[in-house]
Image 1 (cartoon, each protein chain N blue to C red):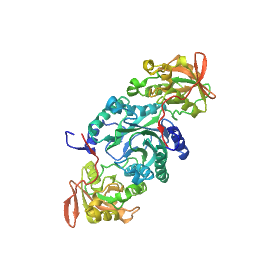
Image 2: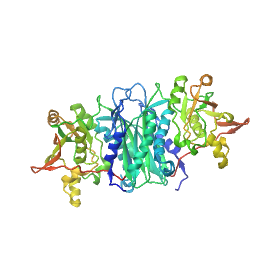
Image 3: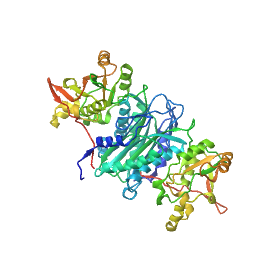
Length: 309
Length: 309
């Protein structure tokens, strides 16, 4: 490790430079979900997530059913973030040599629980056994509801910022049991123009930075408007950090963070079809949060995979 | 391990029983590639493969570029087996903590080499770091050339059996450098009706059993007609097994095995658009091979992942 530690973001930036533009690719690497033109009228969505024992979950603590369910749920959340609907999934497993068959069946029961709820057929996969720990990789394809999926990059200064639920402290349980916001995304898409959207997998502050950077904007949050989860307050009792800090920085709530015009924002507040919380506005530049009348810088708190050179 | 060792096939059979039929799924678990109806006129193909260090490859021996290339190549071979064309790919990595960034870039260079050749854009993925060894999982989506993809299950008794190339001994090098038979599949699909097709990943004998079982047929091979690779003869010098046994049982040649009517078979032999070898015929039941005028049973030699209960 001669060099400083690098990050997944730097790698993704390298990938983006390395990959040439392609006429059929509407949205490529770096977003939650890719969008590709196939032969239908609506773009096809593709997203994939790999969960690894010891790094993304503790198998003994969570149990295989919850791990299987989560492995599909994180993918469905990515489809929701584009306001898409899931079409099918494939599941690849790297199983430990001992107990692999029983483990595979339990994982699959968890996957199936959520797949049934959202009517997503599991159409294939690849099952391997090896000397390492459990790895589960799921890819979901889906379809855009409209003619174009909702990107991260469409926000403009002045847009209102919303989230779909309470945030923080997901480690106390929600990270294993959350419901991907597919129904909410569809309902919102039908009511307003979603200019930019992202799911909160790595923390509100960090995802807002992503969305702002991709849109060429800044953002200002109002701390009093941020819906803080009970779990964030509970965690704050032992963590030494305030509940707000958990709501801003904790990952894996998998709520949606989205931007709409002020007119659409008014419409959502007057006639809410799903729970929404108006937490701030997009700005020309810079990220800040208003706390008790003071404007403080908003850092990109949140989870980032370390990657060494 | 109270029970006997079970196999991936048994697990796939369990999965098939567990997964309900779905009106949009033309081909589901157990085939090389799934086929799903989206909103276009042609079915969408989806295939996925996970390669794991120590089990599927030796990273130090093969080098990361070759591993990356192979991880995409095995998926493209699955698309070829349906007579499809690849549309896009997503790549998930589980990287070791030390040297992950450099490794990821080298893997990607190998992936890109083949992706460029077949014009397959890499549209996304998921990059993780963990305490385990390298895992690489690629999913490729594709499109059927015709109105239906070529399944494993369409062969009939009397059909002629063909392969697209020489077999056996791939461990000496071809398993890392093979070219997926996409161009060959397209050319064959345009010339004749491909009733059933499969790519030879786990060995000719085993894949023929798969194809026969799915089609409700048996098969008879003629040993003298089987194209034996030079690598099989070379390997036989040290393995103690005859070259034919390597051609029948070695995996990872990734040639295509397919069935056509006798009329189409004659057409292929009279006007070959790509190299093809007529190696036998499908029968009503049973698997056998003719060697020097004797009919011997043909076992399902080949690679199978062990999976313990």
